[in-house]
Picture 1: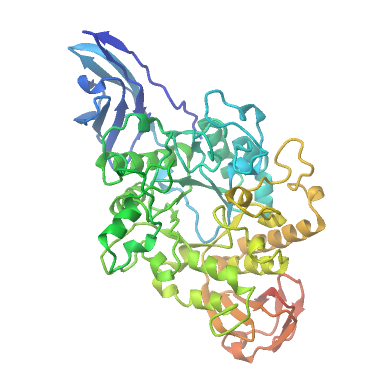
Picture 2: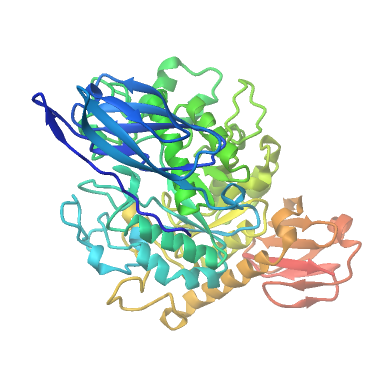
Length: 615
């Protein structure tokens, strides 16, 4: 990847006629030629900058309009890059009384060849999710950054622990060997907050990697290293809110830059208000305008400058870091019209790009509302290609721990997929058993590893894109103290100098951990090699007596998946499945490795799954 220096501007503060003028920030700090959308809006911040006149003389880089807002320390400059504009350095001049008060050397870069045609994550992939502060500390020199509000305190479960980009780099081969083909990393941008800054969801600088994780250049190195290993990079973004420590919170551009209330007002967290045909205006207003938390000011995406800022920031990171996808946090919380425009702009520049939105809702129809192509009654089109399957997550947490009944136990899985008619594209949905915001799956199953194996086998064979939370492969739990988010995000053993053991290595795993790791690795690599699981059709049979059977098939291959939710071994008569089995005489059981020469009866141990390649 072409290396670039993030900031290349020159600041020339001046005192002219007793008025101090400075150019302190320009965002985006640089841009590229060759985008389909030729427009660019720059945010300029500096003391009394609105009192200046602005000019630029660079072929094809045309200043269309200068916007002044209520705060005299801001300007918003509208540019057009005409077709054929060449890469180079454009000098933006700020004059006061015809004298130069400041300059910014604005770089226009050439886009990397093929940038628009990048291949994004899809149902061929297995996604691995990790929290950078809790995965591995590869560079202890950045644990303490002078001037930042919070430093490392590994003894505090809710504090910073020191994980960083270099730590991830040290263990890329571990991720590749497990079989993951896409890496979703929780937010990496600067979070200069006094407490709880480790999780990354309170952005204080949208153009800077948090120095405690590394540098922008380190992020580029990670992107390169992942791509060399055939692993896609997914960036976690947050549009609903920023951090209270963001630099603009001390000097807002406009009064409506964030959603203001007479006193702190929390959102009701009711994402269903957007799809509720009977919703009250006060409930929907509180949902979208209320703050997520006291330290998370709610951005007003209805403000056109905020909208442009966020859209351009996404495009900037895709182009700069070679991203292969985006995970968008709290997707329904921002103004939905802006989110639709964001999706349109991304797909305009990157037609094959995939974005998965966190739409944390309980029912398939509610989640499906947000997926691109939904025939919504109100006419809304989100332009969001993918969503997380939270209804299936809920079903997985209950399916293996309760008695099988008409709509309980393993039937919950059947019932959720039976509602796939709601989704425009069920194959482009991310399926998961847990993530950084919920209890680890083993905790929900009373540490029953059999149930974890069932859940992993299921998400790796059902439709959609499987996501695996870091540490699942080594049976990580929240530990004895199961309270709080910090315990859901415990340190990976061996990621820190001086750790008692290193579970990144075979020698550092317990017998049980090694068994789980081998189980998951085997399934992931098998899935990676089987196109039928990526794009094949799905058919299932109504569960009976705790047995759930489904098939993945295409014109070349048929896979049979048998799930036994009973405690005891079951031998099933297979005549019920003859619409698939009548063409086959034998099969190979992937998990056990057994050859099946007689398909008329199949035995499967209690609380287990078998995947059978039919022959």
